[in-house]
Image (cartoon, rainbow, N blue to C red; front, side):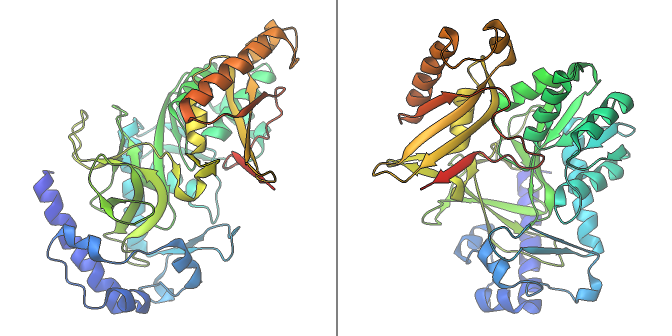
Length: 422
């Protein structure tokens, strides 16, 4: 679709979703009033919706259809208060399956492929999102879910799937534990990895591809908008294609909320263009990225977003320096003797906050040293070299600690990268 035709479709759908939301949801009616958009640029004048609004409207205050018309309800864990509830009509589920099929196909999934799903099922949208999209394509689905590492090892080795879907941190955990037991992750026959649900860097991509011998692709989504499937990488891996005929993207300054042009880094804002059960207009995702409208080598004409750098509320401020965990990760993983298991420990109990970065050494280095010792000359040299590289990259002196292997906790879901103390 040409850019002009796409924009005409987006405007038509935007005008319709605003009419739908205002007519059916008091929350939107109070905020949007008699909004009449003549062009896509008029969207910037409308107010934002934030996650706090979803919590305040718990459980069904944002529904635009009678509850009896809902086909499915998902919800967040509610770790920071009341959970955020998201709902779908049968038509919304069809859209979800369609956009998931798009991103998976763009990454190289084919009819008949065997897909091992290691995302959690249930209220979390990951497992069912990949499941339904895979079935739409015609893939064979193995719905293993998260947890139970031994079962994953058994099924991966016996079923020999073509593709795996998981958080990148859990996939690395599977490869690491399988290798420790004498298995060969690269001999599983995996061709394709579909990863998401947490920010990850090019260094983690390299580690995943080296561990499994597959091609790793980034899939992006969030339950408030639809679930996974909002965007995903194609074979060119030059940004994530957004399904912008269903989800209209904007980038705004995370502090001021002012709209930013393509190419500028800021907070991603999304508007659902076709969702019926729970439409959202200008939802602030909290995710930091940038957009491009330039043509992609794959031929797709949709807007593309850069890999998520982190969340606006995950940004650390340490001694006046703004820092995202992904910036630390990308620097650490450029050091071959380190592995993608790390944590940032921020101690604010002192006058000046102290940042300690804990990271594990590569098994090859430990073997070469005859076992782990923090005082071994190779470990000491590595610590100094990594600390200097990190300080140059982030502009902040840190206390870098190389900890014994398997010290950093592994997660069966999203990895915990930051610990705050004091």
